[in-house]
Each structure stands twice: as structure tokens, then as C-alpha cells.
Length: 326
Image (cartoon, rainbow, N blue to C red; front, top):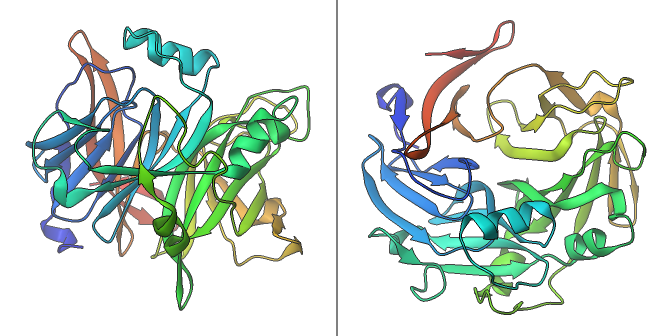
């Protein structure tokens, strides 16, 4: 990462017509990346556009940068959200329900309006756990798909990617009170990637996670929107839309410590509520980027008559005051 003190304190994405708002942000210190639901945008650190990957017919959510690649959650589903995306794109395409980790080669994103399928910039791998839980009767665990994603060193010799479930808001059931995060070794994901083909589902059997992590937070509205590993805190920051169950405090953010005491059964790891410290912070659901040393970018998204945009602002973390805008 570049010298944080010399990085831009505010970056405007530009305004774009798309199917929906900004879903996530990431940076390598030289470029900014923004996911706008159906396309990925690359800019310089002043917000000047460098390139974009367009043509997605599904929901591109949270994104994370790692070693020359942008990883994102990518879902195709035929519920109200998926149908709304297709309607906004004015297409009657029929795409089977499927849930992917998407991998963009950032070195190839060098012009605007590159095609997600034809320009060989994007590969994907299907996630078997998510497909199985989403398609199960009643959507097992309230699974609505995936959204939050981040990368970090799981052990000294194994880098992993973590993908969080989207979880339907439903105050009548109790099996949806955990955030669910899949852990997959990054090498395993990279070896399983294949080109995106939206007319069919590639690698339909998918790959299974090495671990399925349950974190008790109480139900939230569509689960973890943005997930970001923070090396400064050595914890994960999870931004959510508040839940509505009265027996929970319904925070908008959780700081998750996976080193807390937990139980293990097979490949399931379960954490109690003491592992997730709740905060009330209004930003993060549309993008978090941990810059190191207690500095962060948070997305402040918006919309006007010309389309959708975000202003990315730098913050500093104070253990007593929380996140402070610079």
C-alpha cells in the first residue's frame, strides 16, 4: 500500500447509470475499484476512469483486492432481487440460480466497457455450499446468496478467501440469527476458476468451503453487505443493514474476532455473541477498504437524476471515539 498520509482523503467515482448502487470498493494503492452491481469500474486515485468491465446480468457485490486480482461475490438468482436487476437491464435472459466467486485480472482492465464474457478479464468458480443452502426448502439458515468477501492469511502458510452469506430478514424464525462465512484456501479457488458463461452455469457442482463459520449476531437484513479483514485490528469488519428482532440490539456493524473461543464440529466453526462487538456506524454497507495502521476508506454512496455514484472518504480509527472522518 502507498504511503497513507499521501493518499487522497476523498475520491469521487463519477456518476453511472446502472442497475443499482455501489456495492463495494477496493484499492491497491495505485488504483481504486468500485462494484456497481452489474459492472466493475477501475479509476486512478483521483477518480479518473481507467477501465470498466460491463455486461454482467447478475449481482456483483462486495469486492476485495489481492495480488493483482479483484475478487467479488457474484450471484444469479430468480428471486425479486435478481428479476429486478434483469428488468432494469431491459433483458429477458433466463439464467439458472448460481453463486460464484468472481476473479478479475486487474492488469487487463485498461479501457471502458470491456465485456465480462468476451474480453478474457473475468473468471469464476461456483460455490456448492451456497447453492445447496439457497435451494434447500425454506432457504437453509435463511440463505439469500452471498455478498461480503475478503482475503487474509489464515495461517502462516495459507492465504484464504472468506465469503459471507446474504441472509433473508425474517423475524419469525431463529435459524437465521448467525452470520455465515465460508473459508476457502485461495490456491483452491484459483485452481478452480473458469471463464464466465452467463447462458449456462459453468462448473455447476462447484467447490465446497474448507470451513463454514457461524457467528451469532442476531438476524440482519440480507446478511453481511461488506466484509473486510483489518490487519491493524487483526479482526474482520462486517457492515450490515440492521435487523428487526427486538431481542437483539440490531447494530449496523460488527467487529468479528475469529480468535475467540468457539466450537468445531466437522468443518463447522461456531462462535457466540461475544466474538462480534457491535457498533452503530452509518457507513460501510456499500464499501470498506482497510488501508493499514488504523486508516480506512468508506463509501458514501448516492444517486441523482444522472445515475449512481459514491464519494469515498478516508477515516481513522480511535479505540475510544470509533471511526473519525479526516
